Image 1 (tube, helix red, strand yellow):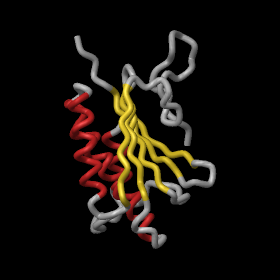
Image 2 (cartoon, rainbow, N blue to C red; image 1 turned 90 degrees about the vertical axis):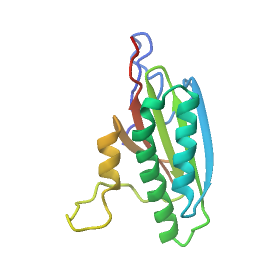
Image 3 (cartoon, helix red, strand yellow; image 1 turned 45 degrees about the vertical axis):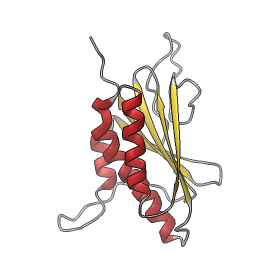
Amino acid sequence: MNSPDLEAEGGTGKPALSASDSHAAADTAVCGLAGQETAAGHARDFSVSVLARWGLAQLCEDVRLVVSELVTNAWRHASDKGHADEQIELRLFRGRSAVVCQVSDSSSREPALARVDETAESGRGLHLVERFSQEWGWEHRDGRGKVVWAAFSIPRTT
């Protein structure tokens, strides 16, 4: 799946911020997370703290939920492979009109929306990511796993 084109630069059609190119980001924050059950909680706290520092508290609830789902998925897939102590990385990028959250792990397993049984206790995570973010996707990292990203529009102030 391709990275989002969140902001076009001065009519050039080139993205000013995409999930794979953070160089245009005005701000970047990175958090290394041990692949443990507590990783999602640390990721939520880190995201809220960063967004508050950036003056984007209005995005906290949606980003907090999505980051929690992405980190939980990364941890579960690492645990399934017997790599429960794997390092997971959370990156937040802020551009002019969007925030992009990226979660990277060593699993090459592609994320996919699952058909959800109404009585199932799991399998809804990516549906929540799809619902609460502007867009989301993933990219392989040349034999080093993958990055799953979600983008959020920064509300315009008047």
